[in-house]
Length: 434
Image 1 (cartoon, rainbow, N blue to C red):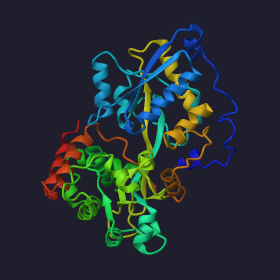
Image 2 (cartoon, one colour):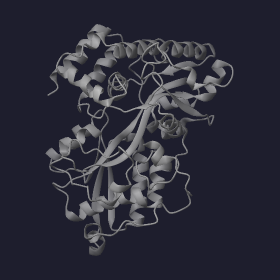
Image 3 (cartoon, rainbow, N blue to C red):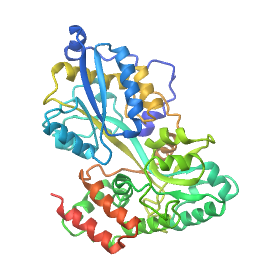
Image 4 (cartoon, one colour):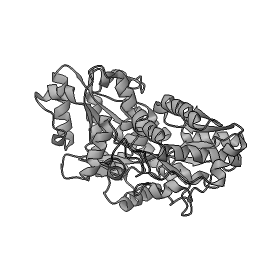
């Protein structure tokens, strides 16, 4: 999917599309009225808040009668929770950025976008219609991947030459690398203790790595819901937690593992104070802002065993991570038309495409965008995709999965609970899911 979207060899100086999107009655209604239309976008990607605000200003220059305000999801609140609260107050955003699993929960309140031009330009597997009665009701905003982000200069120094990411295929390989980094005088890694990172990303690997067959992954989650998953004896889960134990041993913040904040990760990685950070390519703008050495970066998979042939040991997760939906319950036809215009702007207008790829460092989900990401993390993801070394993230996790299981992972990280307690809390959580 990502290769299709990003590895085109077409002329980047060309206009993004030889055919501009056709104007319709809905998309031109606001322009014909001459009145300013105000729309809002609820942003659940806090790391690009500034970029989205700048994009809103640029979009207004192209569309003088549309005022776009970007509303951030408050820290500690999921996009589902915030969107639900706004609907409860009778003031939903015109455009809402949701996690993929939450789109179906709003299907009665959002517009059917099946007839939009960009549907035909979306890359393979980026449109999800399973939870929306076969309709396209969400715009695939970003393709993202995650794993261990590494600083090449730090690792080159640690191994005494040119570091080869292909040498890390097992948990033992990873610990050996940590020891070498530590011996070079640098912290091996930093663990960000936010519940969303531990619960939505790290723990989710225990599901994704169950099998390369996504149907088997879904079947295992159904077993957990039925109380039959037996997480405590699951090889993938235990292997992943064995890796986590190694991580905690070499964590820069092991003396106070829960005090770290998101901003600490890119700072210590960018300054060469740590060699590795578990995070995704969405963090590139933050790393770039802290990168004093203009270093090179890439991804390493998170090993789940000591058998290099096991699925998950050489794969990173990559898939559509955020989707945009348009409100139909409270938004006026003019606001809906303006919201559609913004989506078209990102897909077809050259300056909108530049925002997606170069300003927000997002891997686009549309074939019409011929720009190749220049940031090293996006390039690393594209390389994994090209080599067939990716696994899909689980897009059906409940909205409260990261908060509740993230809290359990935080207790385990702080050694306030052992693995038996962690297993019980996670299994009890799944049994409670309706």
